Length: 160
Ligand SMILES: [Zn+2]
Ligand SMILES: [Zn+2]
Image (tube, rainbow, N blue to C red; front, top):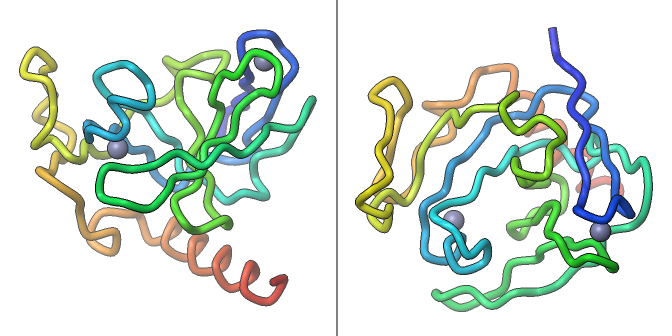
């Protein structure tokens, strides 16, 4: 049973609702995420873009340079500039920032990635898979999430 997950920015102009559970939840310790958040890591809920239902406001895309070249598109509140979600080259999937949920304690990472740049004082639980860099989606994601991803990519392709 999926729980209701609403969230938004600091000023309240942007409000959203996730209409289902996420596909998978990342805790990313990479240097890009550290710089973008000014913190130790980011929590990203990966979910189909059409399952992020806008309740108020329109988040504005900002293209942010990444260390290895290229850009990452981060969507921010136009008023208070809080980042609510991002895209990594695939608009069908949003990476919703876990800290913008009304109840951030309602989600926990399914995987820790880019632990090669994890800050040494951050301890990780043995119960959650952790990878120096990235991981094999097919090996880690539940079958239901893989099916959802395939469907999201397919429908994005025909809409384009
Ligand atoms: Zn705002
Ligand atoms: Zn990262």
